[in-house]
Image (cartoon, rainbow over all chains, first blue to last red; front, side, top):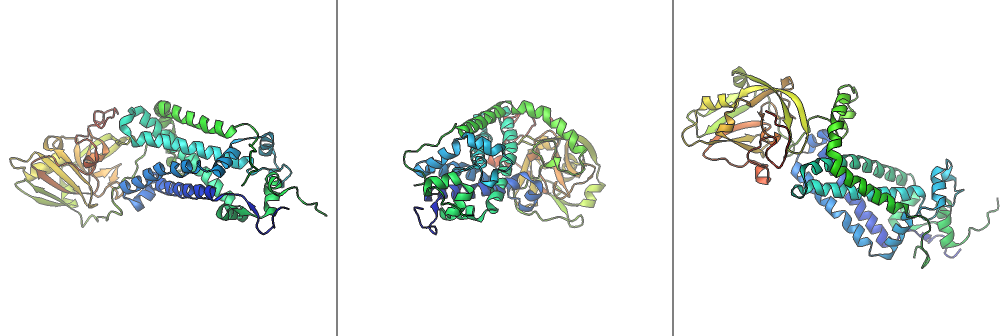
Length: 210
Length: 242
């Protein structure tokens, strides 16, 4: 062990935590305002369509800002690169029925987290692109606007499900939540959830005598 | 330091491929989505009719009304408390109760409702007093060339030229979808301007004012066309509704 156990391992840098936090708040604002714009019952309750629309549009415009600023930081780029790369072990993990038992040593991110990362990024980019087409009607022909509306609606539905899944996994693991809040996680948690990553940072696990 | 310096993650850049693939699909959807929607909408509408749970109606396709309001909660008008004022450049200003309006000659129409944002509800039954009848009762004076319509939501306004307002398919609607107009649809009394986009059919109508010139309404001050003919205005090419 290279560190005292109470200090734990550094899982997320300050820059990563800020990018995640700011983008996360914007996504929640986008989802709530989208629900009001889309659902008639909520729209009846809230009204003020032009105000809700402005909140939605400008949160969307703002969403890439923390992500692009974050890419200036080496630690954000390193985590993005980590999410990008799939190894043979990742495919094995995805196919395995017992993927959570720790038999497949997982790196910093498991394959599910990697998939969520790229699907969220791609879905977010599609929402931005289609949103821009709807927002700037003079730049594109009418049929593009109709197509963009269709794609935006269905992508939003899928993106919302992805966010729900992300939140439900996070809420079931208080240590993971501690990690994104404070940046650090206990070594024991890292060894059971991300064994390969823990070994890289803290060295091989001491022999267990059981 | 989260990774030892210089170490690069191994493996194939699957994340990048997923990201770019989704972007490509999205772009294809923008260009080709309109044609897909044309095929999809009637199918889903068919399913919606047969779906007792109403879940399919929440999917982002199909042919249903969407509720739009530009203010917060709109006060509900009771049948007894409702008044429709006709004022401005007229010989005989008036205030009509709902009972008054119900006793006037009624016109029935079945027409599509087309929103300028793209959704359309086919074959909606409408019934009410032709706006021209109320104008005849009031008697516009010389110099009156337009009507300004006001909603009791406190915010929304609309306008029509006198010529447009006199068309037989412009109704002060009391019934919609075979029943009295509900509050959410703009009841007890709303306008239905059949040949024009939905934003011209002002909800929660409570004042008709004859004016010397056309005064742009709520959305017209925000960029919509003054003349809202379906199919030839607002940069759209929908099938006409009248």
